[in-house]
Length: 90
Image 1 (cartoon, rainbow, N blue to C red):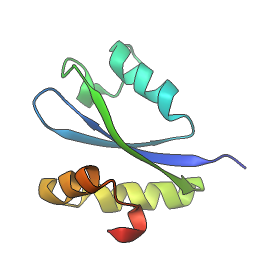
Image 2 (cartoon, rainbow, N blue to C red):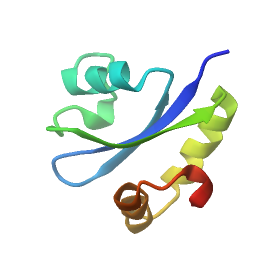
Image 3 (spheres, rainbow, N blue to C red):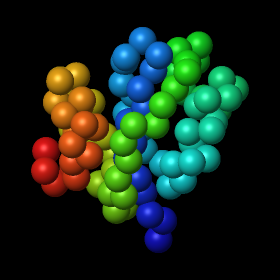
Image 4 (cartoon, rainbow, N blue to C red):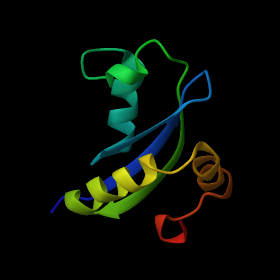
């Protein structure tokens, strides 16, 4: 069974992007490459910074958690990053 992670990337303009993956480093490299494997939302918004990540469990849990984080305000997301909170602390 694969280990899934959730992560937050900060764009140059301060916007935050939430994603899930089984390999955070590979996925972040893909985002930074601006290739077809990069998320369309992130293309041209660099430089990008990986600001938070957490192992989350299985894919189903990762997807549900991604939705939960995307619904948070920017202030709450910044708090997660600043305090390096666990998803259970949200």
